[in-house]
Image (cartoon, rainbow, N blue to C red; front, side):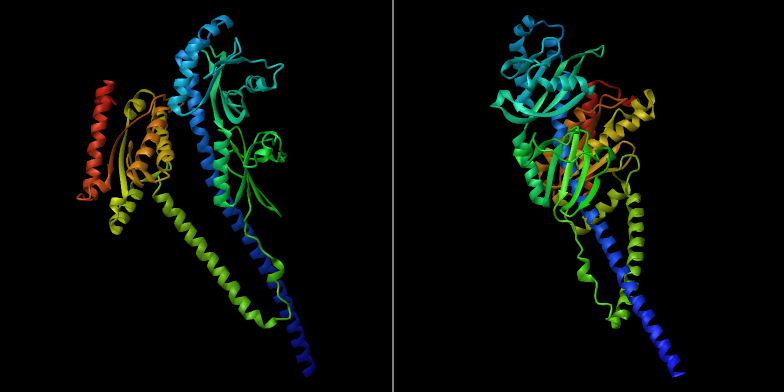
Length: 480
């Protein structure tokens, strides 16, 4: 009987020992997997922030290049011109390019005539392109062969002491769809490198911009530009809207296609969360910690369930304060934030902007609700791009929007200028014009007013702006 009891105890001890061994190994594997997932989430978050900032760097030069391609004077100077005629209009072309460069802040503004191959810059006709024999001119052939409306390439700026620049090459197309030439601007490489260096220092990452072949186009290590290559074997696996994640011993690599750059952003995160498994596995002989481990596992399970429930609640709450069409915050979200501001009594820290679309009704009535939706979505994207750095934007009605910005008057003015610029350059599929009336109130300049009075003032300014719009355009307000 005693022997049986000892045997049973030995069996139980062995079972406990095996159970504890399995439990510890399972726990280590779970911790390893969770840590790996958390590391990926952290790295992806950093990559998304950096990606958005870099993409914004290409919005302006592409928009300016598009504006140049539509310039009537520039079209007139190159359409149907012979080389002799090209020489005769070079002064007019030069003055026009200098004017555009001064207006938008670019020294390098260029136009190429497809017929004469004249390469116009602020220096006049810099040269006539020889795409067959001059390696500096092969970019134009590559652009024509691409079939794209615009391309991006890195090259030396021969008109600026051979310094490296990133060029936006935008096609000039006539009314028949035939190519008249190309135009664009050059972004100084040093400016891009400085911005990348700040991002790398701030987030402890390494950033590369490469073309489809993996050739490095922009790098803080300038010696690798146009000479170094990254592995491009996995580029075909990359989706258009997310990062491709790879984990290695040297860190994790995240790659995303940037449409504006027409190439790939590669980010190496130098500080992913790591797990040293050897330090976690304790000697199996320490059976007395079984109870602690069981409690810890129970706690992990409960915590995971609570986190899952909390995450589900947060997702439902977030959906309840977001506008489904635009992705902006909705009226409920605005009211919640207003209550927070009132509770914190910090209204003077904000700038309130009331906005209302012009022409939504006529778009819905004359073209269709798809056009109306395009207006609403287009305006919301302009608002989000211009204002998201300072605060939140809300869609509180069909064509009514509000922005709550937290910053100085100057910061708000810069954001409004950016918004006006984006609105002015809007180009939709169904709608080619976008107009928004707005009323801006800097709350610190009206400390004697409460929140409702501030909103009333912004509304009044917005409607005054709308009256001016109808007076200026001569449109019938009752019909739009």
